[in-house]
Image (cartoon, rainbow, N blue to C red):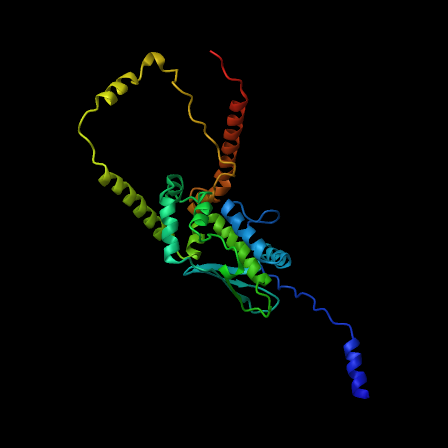
Length: 307
């Protein structure tokens, strides 16, 4: 009887709720640019954060965001397409975090590069070191995804005792990884298994092969076409008609997103200045973009001039 009562009393006892542990404060962590509001600036880093928000519970993300802004991530480095970090938690020994993305197969990369070669606007942006917005659409058409769409696309590990698939230490590292993507969009390609040099070399090869095929398929003709020659004579420039045009110029659409500052970030610190180029030239980039957009909007509102 005594044992049964003992078991009943244990069974009826209220369960103890474990309070979340507090991290040991540190001033040795990686400084986060974000203090409040949006964590990243570029559209591709925003897509990375949006992917995390779909795959990770809000509570984990909130704690990870707080960890990242508090400087609890002690180190963050990329090694062979994998991001390694040390995060100071509630124990004296920092936790080791590993973050990776499932690499795309070689055939998938070839389809993506071939599709990019057929888009000169996107290829030119990539060759210039920029991340064009339309590249996400190209990846979608080629069937692989540039950004993770399921938790299986992420390779996550942490040495903390949390049994959850994504702990706050992993979430904090993911947020700081978003800031790294802000500075270098090609990091996303490396995490997917193709480095910047490999991607651009494959793109140049595809573009060169396409132009070579055109050159081989259509040899230049040495014969003079009388109709073409007469048309060139009639369309030659006339100083008297300099201010007139046969047809209106094509419409120029300005991009709606904020100016891309990733190139400035990759340039790093300028020796003649005490701060980086983003701090000095970033406001000028944004001001010029806003002024240009306002000028185009004002031009569109002006009434047409009737002759």
